[in-house]
Length: 619
Image (tube, one colour):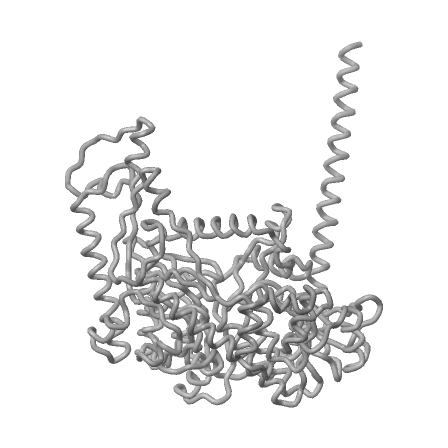
């Protein structure tokens, strides 16, 4: 009896297992068919159409970058957080330039609330094309719920600026404050051995000092004063304001607020910084009056806002439309982006890998259709080995008869400048940060903390340098001497490289080097930069050198795997790649900054531990 019962139970369980397996297979196949259907629909769906008389809408979400980095969109779901958000500057520039001469586009609408930053030079380039759009007789209208300094600098070029009645406009000036860990590390017994050349090479100072050195303070003051002068001059000119009045708004903001009873929006209006205060529905009504009612065209579909919206098209849909209409050119100019810390080996899009960049440059050189190369640099430097590897490939490209133009974005310093030295011409924005010609190495020693814990290290070696770079042991004098000699040799190599590229003597280069950071304007005055201008100017210069009139731009980038490409397309379709992190608090931002800084240090992988890196970032 019991045996029959267990046999029956076994048959029931086996049937349940078969049933569950069938359900699993059916569910899996349904999911597969749904995903396949979505991909087929995306592939065969007709491209978006540009409505006549529409407004081109720019809603940049996140940080302006030169090249979008690959970030696993499923990580957003796993971490229950929002994506950081990136928007490619080149896409915005291309869209605005195309719309300038497009009779279907009647005006441009810019909403800045989700813009988080991107460097003064990137903002200046976007401002310039917005000014060109206005010069073509087409208005630019801007609205913000509130304006940060970054957002307002971009918005200030518009014909009409709207601010929410309960919003604010805060201009604070520029500052650079650094956390110094020298005392903390000393109390912990951790020694950081630093080897460098150049009194302005300040990257290592946070690990060895408790305050800013006078050299770093002087250099930083000059940089911030130069950048801020550009900011205030541009804003005052665009808004037709007296510079002194703008200074009063910034320097005595409490008094400005007191004059309006604490009404920040009214204070901005009274100061002439904005033109109107409007709610969202009033803003929408105004735009409907200007371009008529219609649907919002973006990502190939039509949506409406609260049942009624103005006739508009977003940047993504507009670029898809105009690119499909554009005839293909036989000749190409390749734009290779070097963005982020320079690392050894292969790296994904949005980072600078020595092997990756060298391969991309080599492929462009060997492509008969590519007539010239532009390297767009937005990097504070990094591995000296990888920097030289990239520079050498640029030099070989020039020797092969293809012009090479370096275009500096917000930062092209230290290793970033080393790369630029391989070009025929160097272009920079007046507010780019560049120079920082110097080299350093850092090595931590944990022998004292380990001794306090009762951990001792002992052993044997066959030579004075065997085991010399063990952080558990005090650094051997011979190792320290070898590192310093290597640093001095690397610095001389850097000077000689720049000397040869710029037609200056080694002594002349040393006089403007020693780790000092310069603005693009100052670098041009010193002979470190050839021309002042943005990416457009650099591309035009490359075309002129190659004697090319009709050309197509290509953007070689690190290859994504098929799975990564599928994830990126799915993220764009689902909207997972566009949402910037929502209003994190001060503590969250501080922890995020520390986590990012620590992560960057852990990624450093120069094979000789020699770095050409600048402790600088674009405000």
